[in-house]
Image (cartoon, rainbow, N blue to C red):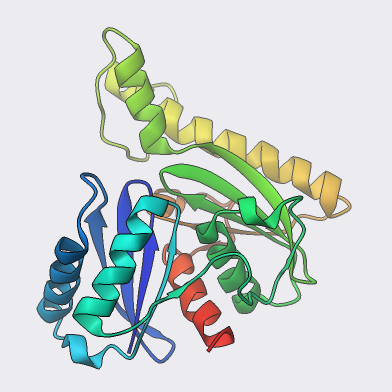
Length: 256
C-alpha cells in the first residue's frame, strides 16, 4: 500500500492506496507546527483506526506548500515507517512540460493536480480548480503542457478576512446558499463567498478559453476540500475532491 500526504497551509490531507484504489482518506490540522513524533504517532494511529497496520505501507509520497513541516514529516516517515518518502518537488519526473517562467515557483500541490487530471483525461485541454485554503486555477493543454493559471483567496480565507477586517460581520458556515440575495447578514456573506468565487472562476475560464485555447472551452474539473459545494453547478464537468492524492501516487510511480 502507498501512503500519500498533501501538506497544505491549513490541513494535511492523507490517503492510502491499494494499487490504484484509494481505500480511505484522513485529515490533520497543520496549526501549531506538529513535531515529527506527533506526526508519526498520528499517522500510525489513523492507519490503525482504518484497519491498516503501518507495516503494510510499502511507500510514501508527499507534497508540501509548508516548507517548515517537510523536515518533520521526512523524519516521521523514517522513524515510524522506515521509509524515505518521495517528495514531489522541482527536478522530479512529472510527465508534464512546465511552461511557468520559473518552474520552481509552482506549488507542488498544483503540479500533483495537473498530473492526475492529464492522466485521467488524456488528449484534452483542461482547467483544474482546486478549492483549498487558496483557490488555484491550473491550465493544462492536450499536449500535457502546464501553462500556468491563477491564484485567488479561498472560501475560508475570504470569510476570515471579512470577520477580522470588519466590526460587525460574523464567522459563518461555508455552504451553498439557497438564494443569491441573502435575507440576513449570514446569508449575504454565504452568498458573496459562494457566488463571488464561482463568478471569478467563470470569468477566468472564459479568458483562458479565449487566450489559450482559441475560443474552445476546456474540460473544467473541480477538486479540493470545498469542491463538493459546487457539485450542482453545471460549470464543472467533473468534481474530483481527491485529485491531488492520485497525482502523488502517479508521480511516485514515474520516479520509482
